[in-house]
Structure formats: C-alpha cells, structure tokens
Length: 122
Image (cartoon, rainbow, N blue to C red; front, side):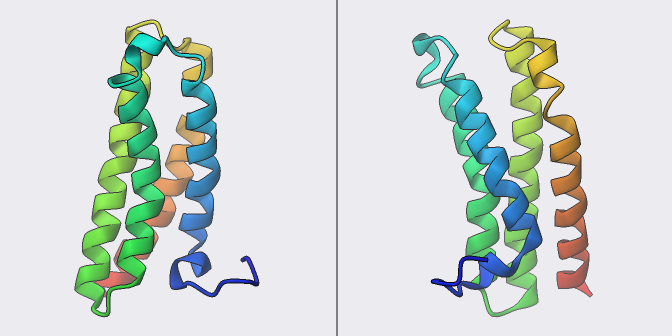
C-alpha cells in the first residue's frame, strides 16, 4: 500500500490485483488498429478500469449491502473484459496466444472478488 494515502480501497488485495490487469490491457490495445479507438479499444480499456474503480467506489460506502453492489459491478466488468478479449481474437485484433495471457489473472481476480463479496454479504 502506498504510505502517502490511506484510502480504504488501497487495503483491498483484489484492488491491488486489478491495477496490473488494467495496465496490461492498455498496453495490449496500443497495438490495435486506430479504427477501433471508439470501439473495441475503448470497451476493453473501460472494462479493465471499471474493475478497480468500482472496488474503490464500493469501499467508500457505509453499508455492506452497498459495498457488495459495487463488488458485483466490478465482477460484471471483469466478465465483460474476458468476453471482449475473446471477441478481439475472433476479430483478429489479438492472437490466441496473447489472449491466453489473461485467463489466469482474470480467474485470480474473480476468486478474490467472490471472497470479498461473500464477506460483504455475510
């Protein structure tokens, strides 16, 4: 955790896991055709950012129910990202080899999100 800040979301391991995923997605989309700047590039980048951003927003909520709501949105964004990566392969913007670098990371974040959600709902 960055010692300069003490935001609640910085204490979440799942938020820490989501940050490198976002960086990886942004790096990947730099190689896509500029014709996709408002399409697939934008969707991939926004979905990756949404995971971390919704965890941050949820951490600021005072009730567990509201925190869980934002954790569910983060999970939805994670699944959207997984889907978009598959579509990027279908559209030949991404090789299957490049796409194969993501499932393990997505699965790890998914497990952490589910654990957080279970804690918030218990």
